[in-house]
Length: 315
Image 1 (spheres, rainbow, N blue to C red):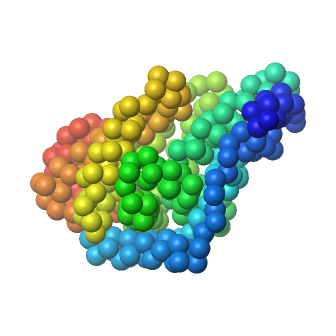
Image 2 (spheres, rainbow, N blue to C red; image 1 turned 135 degrees about the horizontal axis):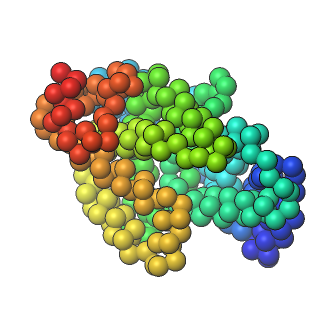
């Protein structure tokens, strides 16, 4: 019934824009189980405690003064979908305003593609630090997708509380990055706007997209470095099991992950982590943190593969 309703919703997509966002949300939610969100008071307090402990540990490791977002939410999959449909709608609005499309099959195709992508992601995202790009004045947010965290903990055969705490530490490191670099949101938004402007004219702004890729590689890599030093338990077993699970995915899921760019995100993790680990080995964590002083101190694509050259430039 869920898949049938989802297909009916997509084929009935309408509106003047290239994507019917209401249909995206309805189609995605109708074809995915929201998951259990029967959270006890003790579990709510555990999520809050994990997040605060992560903040304090990351502060101690990095000497960065930051705080948790005002919005820290324990979500089910439908909550995550609502939040991210709103984000995609906001981020893509400039492109929708500039691109003229004929309603009908184009809207249906675009709506179906977006619903499919978000449905897949809603079943796999564990936690998310959301800087709410292009949202005027709205505070950043931190989401925990409880049904996915519990499911993956069961599949990996690791204690739910320990796995949940690991996810909290990883996401809180992103809050530290944006707290250390007040310019980071504007920097990402500027590159996004440049890419969208070119795309609306039929061109691809490879420079802007390349800048986005190197920036996100720095964001993910620094988070991995700080996780290694801030998390107050061993977690090699969890990381190893998680990597084995990803590597053991079937051909269909592997294809979907490539289609959604998730293989790129994994490469960002690995490449960024290698960069910052070498910087920390050459100097220290404080030197690695200089990346957040200004956009000019972000590593270039070439420097990501030659950390020593970045160290020489910033010293």
